[in-house]
Length: 111
Image 1 (cartoon, rainbow, N blue to C red):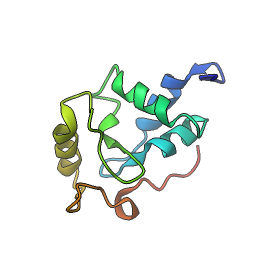
Image 2: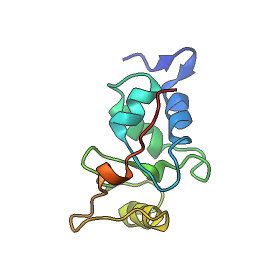
Image 3: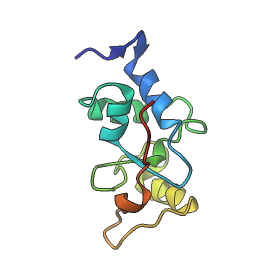
Image 4: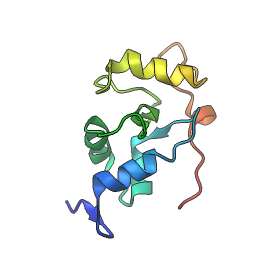
């Protein structure tokens, strides 16, 4: 699989997209992959977020799966830490520990 696009690595493109997810909103792995240039990169998004070199400026905790679930293997403190970070931004979870994507998913304009 080619993981470069316009001279940038997949990880660089993914980080660029994740930096744009607004406070109080989330994006899915697939959404980030598509915005990064390849809708088939969902797993690459996961790898990139796990290797995030700058979590203070690349808010990887704002990325959830297609069901609105946080990562069981959140690299920066586990799933409870990811939940806490999202709740601190006003994002609520349902009884199944899922984010309501209809309410909180980033409604982006392609860039």
